[in-house]
Amino acid sequence: MKEKLGYILCGAAAGAVNGLLGAGGGMLLVPLLTMLAHTDEKQLFPTSVAVILPICLVSLTISPGWGNLPWEEALPYLLGAIPGGLLAGWLDKKIPVKWLHRALGILIIWGGIRYIW
Image 1 (cartoon, one colour):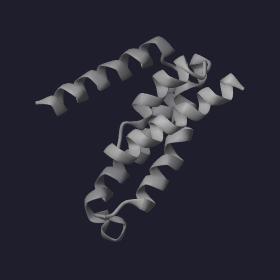
Image 2: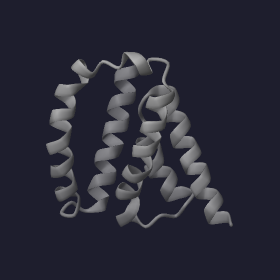
Image 3: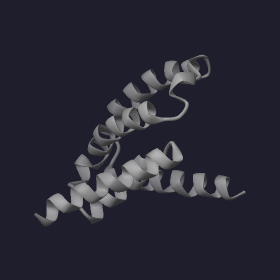
Image 4: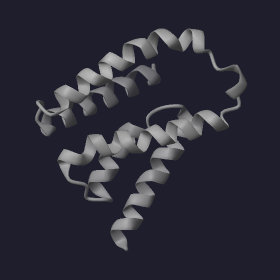
């Protein structure tokens, strides 16, 4: 029961952050999955991606700008995201989890500093 509550809290926190800020749910989800749900380290990143995709779709559909989505602006990013995601999925199995954690930590700190200034 306690483990299921951890999963629910992780999902709720990631959904709230993602819905309010438009991003960041995955960055919050990975540490929460470790602390609250005790997810195996090898499953952290795949689990995070599997959870964030539906959260993003829900956030998108209830967004006030739903009828005005800037597809023309997003398309170049989407075209790059597909090969980037494929490459990352392939590399994920080759990079030690410890280095993935460090990379995520650096991205979180860098993003936080950029938003403060």
